[in-house]
Amino acid sequence: MKTFSKYWSIFQITLINSLAYPGELAGRSLMIIPFMWIFYQLWKVTFNAAGVDAMNGLTLHDTLWYLMLAETIELGRPPIARTMSENVKDGSIAYILNKPYDFLLYQFSTAMGETIFRAMLNAIFGGLTVLWLVGTPEHPEGFLIALPAILGAWVLHFCINAMIGLSAFVVEDVSAFTWIYQKFSFIFGGMLIPLDFYPQWLQTFAKFLPFSSAIYGPARLFVTPTTEIFINVMTLQLGWIVVLTFLLTIAYRRGLTQLTVNGG
Amino acid sequence: MNKILHPFYNIMTSIEVTNLQKTFQTKRKAAGLSGSLRALIKPEYSSVEAVHSLSFKMEAGELLGFIGPNGAGKSTTIKMLTGILHPSSGAAKVLGYIPWIDRQKLAYHIGTVFGQRPQLWYHLPAMDTFMLFGKIYELDDRETKKRIEYLTEAFEIGDLLDVPVRKLSLGQRMRCEVAASLLHRPKLLLLDEPSIGLDVVAKQHIRDAIRRMNQEEGVGVLLTSHDAGDLEALCKRVIIVNHGQIVYEDKVSNLKRNFLTTKLVQVRYALEVSKDFSINGVETLKVGHYGVKLKFDTTKTPVDSVISHLSEAGDIMDITISDPPLEEVISKIYQEANA
Image 1 (tube, rainbow over the protein chains, first blue to last red):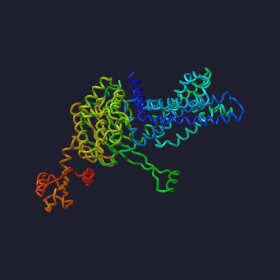
Image 2 (cartoon, chains in turn cyan, brown):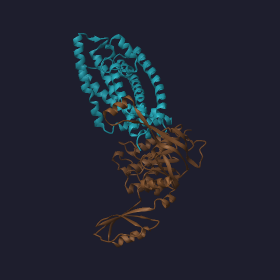
Image 3 (cartoon, chains in turn blue, orange):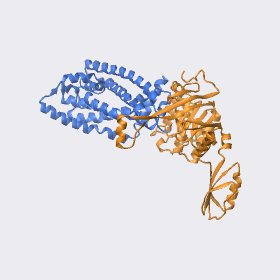
Image 4 (cartoon, rainbow over the protein chains, first blue to last red):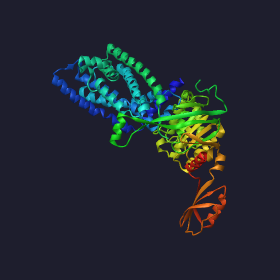
């Protein structure tokens, strides 16, 4: 119980800390409004040019709500790898490592603490914008059904980012890796284009990758909340979480022996 | 279970270090574009020996100074003793634990302060970090609050705890930092440059509180510093390191007797003075119309005779008596070691 309580406290203090500058937090979240407006214009033209109401089962209305959730997940996630890299570069990792807790669980608790308010504000601003542009979602209950998958997406994002962050123990600067990850998320995660619009072979390939489990899966579940999609998304997410957690633990143990703490 | 001290912990010895060594690989790169391109194709590395075959012991409850100039290997040693860094070779036991293997178990029994890095949450009041540390070290809320009350009184931080840390002065913040590191009643406190950048009053506050914690709770203190004042005020024994090696290890009283014998005196007078400042055994470093700077050996010339001579010259407006820089003391020790 005390073990759980320490990670819960770390989560709570990060949550409170994220409210230190509420104006900055809200201002950053407002960015989702122009994003959704641009997506609306872009996809309205595409659907009109194609002369169809739906493409591979998704209407313009579905596409917009899909993109709203995809952006909420993406914009809500904190820059874990960059933070870990900064901790190594400025030497503050010394304080993070010398406390009686599991380093990875500490990082996970802080990441979740930073995520909650950001994601909530993104969902509110993004949701209101899409509501104004195309009306209510077809399955409002889809949000509740997609909730476990949204949480799973953040866990998955944490695993991938923490893997990148751990490489800072050796290479210190990880910006190149985070850049690659971001681009992979754009292409294979379905962040700009729902994977359903890809050719079949690319869809099959992309849907199997962890990037799609971290964005496409929960967003698709939100617009089509069926039991079949729910099971598919959750199974794939769980599989990737198990594999990546295992790799993360190994990488952490190896990284620790390589660590060089900067500063006097 | 984690909070129980190691079963093989020798109650008399806090730290035992044997032939500890740490070598870092540093990438070398020649200046300019061609140097950068060459480094890309064929990177060259050189080894930097931060700690070289270090061996020492620290008794439980001891106040041990671990001093040396910048780059001497002090912080690297502390980081190995807390388990953050793995050594290249050698052995160490801290409270019976091998730090880099039992890092989490050891963490329950030691407190650390890295003077150049904050551990308090910057945007939140220090009280939030204190309560968080209570949870991390698995203390009951009641126990945490009682402990905070005690530390608040010892470090005189009562009116600081509810202020966001970013609004505190460096001295106030450091008092809170050291107090936070003592929340879980550690057996050993590792202080890495706790007085860096602090003014005289702030340094005194921290030194007094640390001395009190040592006397009342028996917490051992390993203090790294490049300020000889910290050493004189707090430590009974000193280890001086340079280039990762021990160059001196003795009681502070012996160090003072043998090496901290020179004093620098700087005097400023209210009115212009034209006195001849030459005193037997005193070296005049600088003379102006309104002041003078002298250097003398306290074993040959008593301080009071120098002061009375200086006060005869006119009304003293300001006087500073200081020790020679630690670098000077170390180079003297080094020269003697090499002689």
